Length: 106
Image 1 (cartoon, rainbow, N blue to C red):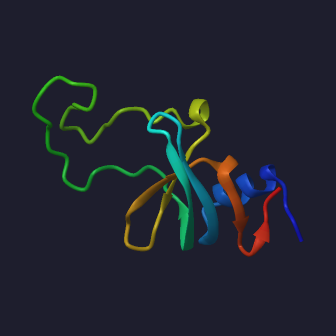
Image 2 (spheres, rainbow, N blue to C red; image 1 turned 120 degrees about the vertical axis):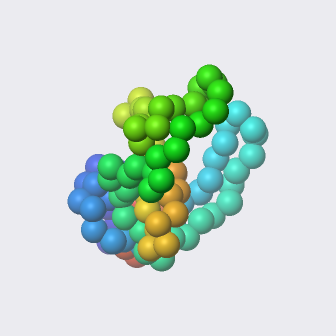
């Protein structure tokens, strides 16, 4: 049974553990096309660094020591951060997901 993108997005944003497959793409670097399969992942919500230490410098990546960071602007870029069981974060474009919980995404 195939599901559409809005159903896929609803499943992701429910916060439950899911399995999914997607294709990588990086327009700026001109590479991609690798198929990534995540056996267990979920949406990463309100993640903050575990040890808030100030970053030296004044660049775009610098932030104060209060644990804050740059706004990822997920709605504008249509991306989502996924958390793996080992607490690693993977950024995914939902448009590039082709399978979630063994259901094809159309």
